[in-house]
Length: 143
View 1 (cartoon, rainbow, N blue to C red):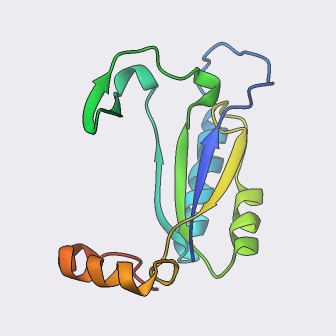
View 2: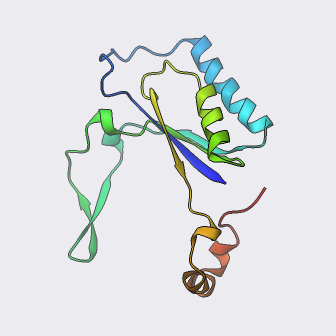
């Protein structure tokens, strides 16, 4: 089962000045990534740049349009993510509990199950197989 663990700041935490993290803290995060990689569960892990460097695209009258700011408040932004492939929700929680803390934009980890082939009704899967056969070969690869 694949899970995305999204990291976000705690909206109730006191505001801190953007002091760079210590070498020890960065090493702890990288060791966590290394441990997940060695365990064979880490699919991807990335930090995200601030929202002002991104864009928001919405649906307006059935067409996609770029929205001007303001963007969501920084307390609502995702700071990064881990995409893991584990055997259960409980195992995903176990990994999240091992994640270091202290960088400031990852105080709260939200664990979300990813859609798998078994979640898609057979009639919809038939459409997927016809419309996107190349993509389907990459969808939900099993370990």
